[in-house]
Length: 164
Image (cartoon, one colour):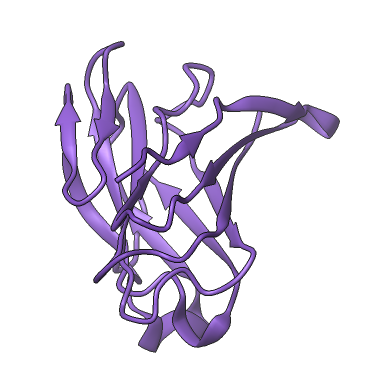
């Protein structure tokens, strides 16, 4: 299995006091996992932020969950092609049960440390918006967990956060 190509997070825009960072993952077809690098230090984990994930097609013919990991040091990283190995990071929760649901190729998530309502993490409840209460952490990392091998796709991750 070949490694996926993961590009670093880069600041795309800081218009109107809203920062937008972008990262892309080019999936190798022999892999069952596709992961991101840790989020930028500039993301403030004590305030709400959004994640937008877009794909250039269905990622897997089976359910394809997306997980969030909490990184607890500057060395936080994910690796792996058929199983995930986490360095200085721990899986916190699944944030959606099927990233590729019904060929919907873009999904948006709200993350807030003090969300006052229940998490929404299933495709069955997607109409109400995907949202999760997550604890502040120095970094966050994401993993697409295929049921089998993934399709050759490009995943684009955007982080969006309004400045104070």
